[in-house]
Amino acid sequence: MKPIRANFYIKTRHILAFSVAITLLAGCSDSDNLSHLREFVANGPKTNHHITPLPKTPAYQPTAYNNPANHDPFTSFSEMLLRKEAASEDTGPRPASHGPVQPLEKYALSSLSVSGIMRTANGQLWAVIAAPDSKVYRATLGSYIGTHDGRITGIDDRMGKQSVTVEQYLPNAFGGYKKQQTVLHMQGGN
Image (cartoon, rainbow, N blue to C red; front, side, top):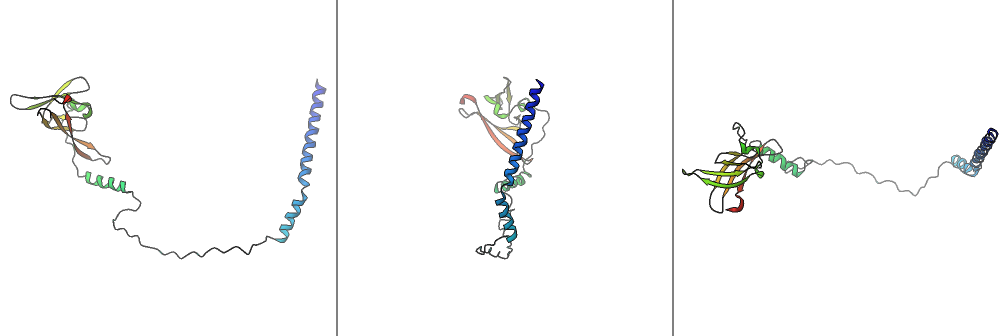
C-alpha cells in the first residue's frame, strides 16, 4: 500500500510543477503589451490641447448677516418656542408643601371618578370619589387630590351638571410647572 501512495504523491507533484511552469510561460509570452509599455515610457504622455481651462473663481465678498428677528440662525423655531416657554415658566407657579400625603393623592387624577355629591345641613358640599383600590373617599373644597399636587377648587351640585373642579400643577420639560384645571364629572350624569 505504501508504494501506491508514494507513486500518487510523485505524480501529483509532477502535475503541479508542470501547471506552474505553463502559467509562468503564459505570463511571459505577452511581450506585445510589454513593448507598448516601453514605447509609452520612451515617448512620454500625449497631451490633448482641446481641453478648456477651468473658469476663474470670483473673489470672495463677505456679507454682514442681517438678523431682524434677533434669533440664532442655527436654532429651529420649535426649539425657540420651547425656550420662550421655559423662560416664562421660571416665574410660574410652584406647588406649596402641605404636609403628609392624603389618601386621594396616591392616585392619578385620571383613575379617580366622582360617585356623588352631598350637601350637609350647614350647606357644605362634599364630593364622594371612588378610587382604584375599590374604596370611596369624601373630599371638600381645598382637599388635595391626584399625583400632581391637585386641589379641589370647585364642587357643582346642580342636577345634570354635578362635577368637581381640580387645579393641579403639571411639570414641564424645563423644571417648572404649569397650572391646569381639570373637571371630573359624575358618572352617569345624574
